[in-house]
Image 1 (tube, rainbow, N blue to C red):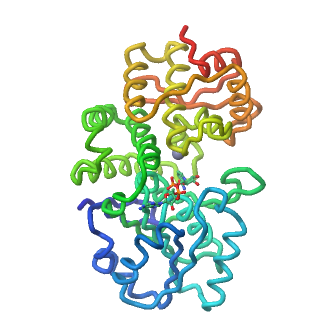
Image 2: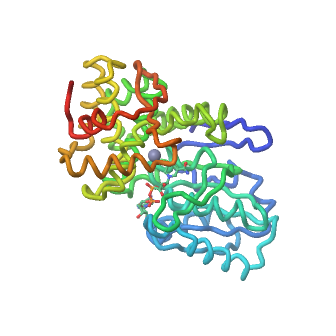
Image 3: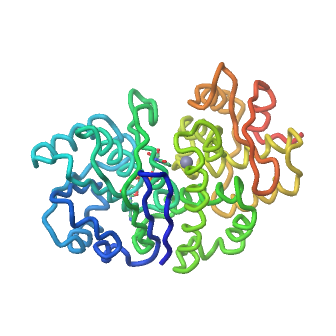
Length: 357
Ligand SMILES: NC(=O)c1ccc[n+]([C@@H]2O[C@H](COP(=O)([O-])OP(=O)(O)OC[C@H]3O[C@@H](n4cnc5c(N)ncnc54)[C@H](O)[C@@H]3O)[C@@H](O)[C@H]2O)c1
Ligand SMILES: [Zn+2]
């Protein structure tokens, strides 16, 4: 078992990572006993798999909202249904929310916790690889609105995060690859040794070998927490966590390839590395090293000129942009990235369609 402390002053919290931790929640977070009421938010799949285990471990009466699964349910309607359930149970400021699920459950639960009675405590029990290495840590909460992703949200830190690697055994392959997208990202933005570790252990990571997956999640979160501690509300350095996401979001929004978020990020990282190579920021060998590692997990689609135009227009609408330029995070060295601003439409479209200079 590994422990990480996120140091954010009065908003500091602990994260525990290891196998079979769910049953030990009372020992790992004894403060939970002080809450008179606990409301668990989960989705239909996770409810069937793990809700009983959580209830047994808590050993007390709880109330539950089971939300419909899928990104389309990260919505204000879902938020309203949770708030109604909590009001029916007379939840007050001294109650606790537990998010048991992937990033959708985590984001909507965190958002609810941040606004219910102006903020109540919540803890995260992430159940997908992506939520264990990324979304459960850092305090970004959100729902989608009017077709715009994460447009309504808050920064709100959990009181505690419990990462039980045993829960990963039931996730499907696409969700595994989606999580690996974010893991590789951490290596590229900050830690080339970790990138090499992922490369050397890719099979064991995919199979959730106990020791390897625990270390991989630990390293990933440690990199994220160091960045979040320096810039909790994304005014500068936290932006580097968006490596692979400018192009990745464009591809996700295009919708043609049926990709999960982290899968789109995998492809986005290769294309953004190509942009870096074509602009002489990195050498050819490093570009191919990134591309080859990504290809162990996903095949990179050939993007047509027509799709490149659509992806580019989506990239122009990215939240990170200012004044009509595209802000994009690019590798400049092994384990190092920087934010760039581009206006060269032709160059970006050439890279989207796979063109090497
Ligand atoms: N807040 C942040 O910092 C942050 C960061 C990255 C992503 N996100 C958000 O996270 C969301 C994606 O999260 P996700 O990839 O976890 O997807 P998800 O929450 O939609 O879960 C994916 C699927 O896996 C199922 N599932 C969950 N745990 C399972 C388990 N243990 N076994 C079997 N099935 C299981 C779910 O029911 C769902 O069908 C997006 O909305 C994204 O915007 C947020
Ligand atoms: Zn992401």
